[in-house]
Structures are given as structure tokens and as C-alpha cells.
Amino acid sequence: MKALIQEFDRNGERWLLLVFYAFVVTVIFVEVIRRFVFQYSSIWGEETARYAFIYLVWIGAAAAVKDRAHIRIDIIFKFLPPMGVAILYLFGDIVTLAFACAALYWSFESVETSLRFGAATHGLRINQAWFTFAVPFGFSLILIRLVQSIRRDISDIRAGRAPFSGRKLFG
Image (cartoon, rainbow, N blue to C red; front, side, top):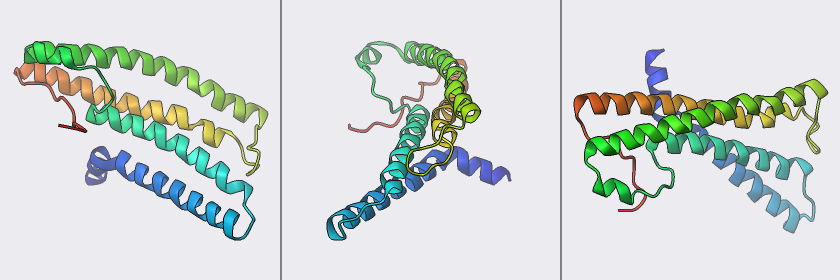
């Protein structure tokens, strides 16, 4: 069980991103073929692809928090000593944590409203809560990754190590 948890911690978001991305690409491909070859399209295809994309975005946000891969202006980091960079990263994570906690709290309102009133999707006719849950799910993953990042930053500060600066897309 511990190995499974460690694997999810290492690659959980990547596997979820792969599943949702593959689903979106497959459904869009099938719908394009159906529309232009058979002159017929389904109502469920576009709708499920849209909702899968929403989950994809929120899971991707959590993955970016984990890898410190969000877009940021980091020119100031070049002029600070490693301790200053670590403190700045820690400050940014704490501010983001406060925002994510508030956003998580308020995002449950739309899920609760969908459940209370039985809001259904237009094409699939299933409860909208399954899809509005993407936002609190994403913020929950973001919170987990932020807590891990804060713990890592505090450990780096205490040990006098240079902080984890993230995976770079370029350079």
C-alpha cells in the first residue's frame, strides 16, 4: 500500500493527465470523423470532451504546483542569495495556500447547489455535480502539493540548501 501511495505521489497527476488527455483527443477525433464522414454527430461527444478538459486543466494546475512550473517572473531570483529565494518561494506558497483554501471552500457551493437542485447536463442528462466537482478536486490536489512544497521549502531553509526551483520548460 505504501508503494502505491508513493507512486501516486510521484506520478499521480501525470497518469490522470494522460487518461483525460487521451480521452479528449479520442472523442474529438471520433466526433470529427462522424461529423464529416457520416454527417452525424453525437450530443455526448462534445459535452464529455469539454468536461474532461476541465478536469485536465485543474489536474494540470496541481501538477504545475508540484513541479513549480507555473509561469512566473523570476528575474528577481537571480539577484537574491539562495536563502532569499527560499523565503520568497515560501511566501508565495503561503499566499497561494490561503487563496486555495478560500477557493476550495467556495467551490463546494456549486457542487452542493447542483446536488440540491438536481441540475442535469444538457446532453448526458446526468447530475452536473459530477463535473462541477472538478474545481474542488483540483484545489484539493493543489493544496496537497502546496503543503508538500512548504514542507520542502522549510526543510531547505533549515538545512541551508538552495531551494527547489522547479522543472524548467526552456533553458
